[in-house]
Amino acid sequence: MSEVKLVELLLTAEIYNRFNELSEDDIPKEMRKLFYGKSGISRPLPVKQDIVLKYVGKFDNLIKKLPFIDFNTFTKQLKLTSLEIATKWFAQRGVELIQNNPVLAYYYENYDSLGVSYQEAKKRNKPKYSDREWLKSIIAELEKDEETAEMLGLVRVFSPEDIKIEFSDVVLDEEQLEEIRKIEVAIEEREFLRQVGLIDIGKLLFIGPPGTGKTTTARALSKRFNLPLVEVKLSMITSQYLGETSKNIEKVFEIARKLNPCILFIDEFDYVAKTRTSDEHAAVKRAVNTLLKSIDEINLVDDGVVLIAATNHPSLLDPAVWRRFDKIVEFPEPTELIRKRIFELSLFRVPGKFNIDELAKITDGFTGAEIKLVVREAVLKALARGDKEVTQDDLIEAIEGVKHRFRLRASY
Ligand SMILES: Nc1ncnc2c1ncn2[C@@H]1O[C@H](COP(=O)(O)OP(=O)(O)OP(=O)(O)O)[C@@H](O)[C@H]1O
Ligand SMILES: [Mg+2]
Image (tube, rainbow, N blue to C red; front, side, top):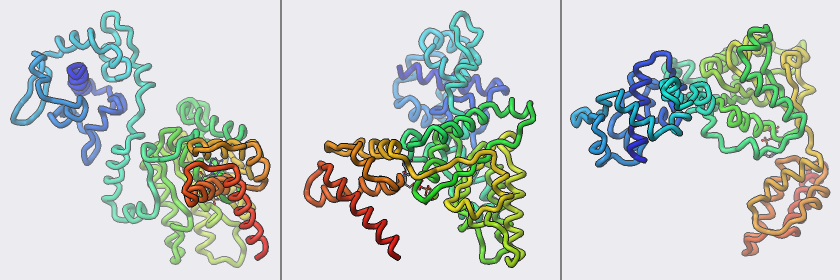
């Protein structure tokens, strides 16, 4: 098996180096990750001893058995001495690997009767923009510009690989899922949308009270769509020197454009996009105008950027802002059914026997964040008692505790 993987690696490198029409996206993700350097992946791909070790898991004695491989002890580089022999050797042993390796599928597509398809292999392989190493190399490039580097300090950039939350960990209702599905197909069908002239697509506004999952959903979408996430809180880039704010907004959009395809997530959107009142400083108005203009000038079809903005004060938003989003996604207080599902998910790995229907029933008005808080409290309560099993009573008491917080808040 090790020999098969070694030959896969060498063949992939050799074929990739020969055919310029193959792109980095065609190299299998796990293999591609080994070739990232400071400025991305270079062509030709150098297969060195350390790369073999990482990909195959061992090196010693491997090449002795394979007469068509040459190892240069000085450069530590490996090469195929005969592509033809290697091709034949591999066709008898590695069909499954070829099916999942677009570079090889491309080469083998018309080879005898292997029946592999380049398009199919490509569909199964994740593109390079989902690699954390790709993102790192792009950011390193951007940081060479001093102003951009400064801006990068104010935004958070995540690779989908580094997002902890899974899409399946977020409980969403049918309407929310429907909007997400539409964005998903829009991403896949960008070319078609361009052809039919529908370019103003891919701008979502998440509205709803605190703790209903807006930020969590934006992050989970990065994972689900396999797109890097640029996350910025508008309060973070609003400078006391108001002239700076406009410039910062422009920079954020510029970064998103450079990282495309990606999701640009603007949190605390109302911080700038509030209705403009007549007595406000001219610079505030300018910042709002810059924001509107930036939103106008970016779109999924041309720029590869999905824009998501979130606010829990939608009523403060300028009407001109509303108009610019093609989708408004509501994050309401969860219904009993949604609360039930959030309890189910949160208690999934917690030992104990619970009546989740009852919990969902008595938590009217609780958000997802508060349900998580209840579970955390109940687990701590049990642990403090020296118990790893949580009881229904622990949960009910924790619920009462949160209700007490509600009353406290209301009384001030
Ligand atoms: N529908 C949900 N499904 C799963 N978890 C949820 C849901 N809603 C909220 N949560 C949990 O509640 C916590 C807070 O959620 P999140 O930060 O996404 O809320 P938000 O809507 O962005 O709030 P804010 O408006 O205050 O920024 C997270 O830990 C999240 O996992
Ligand atoms: Mg949030």
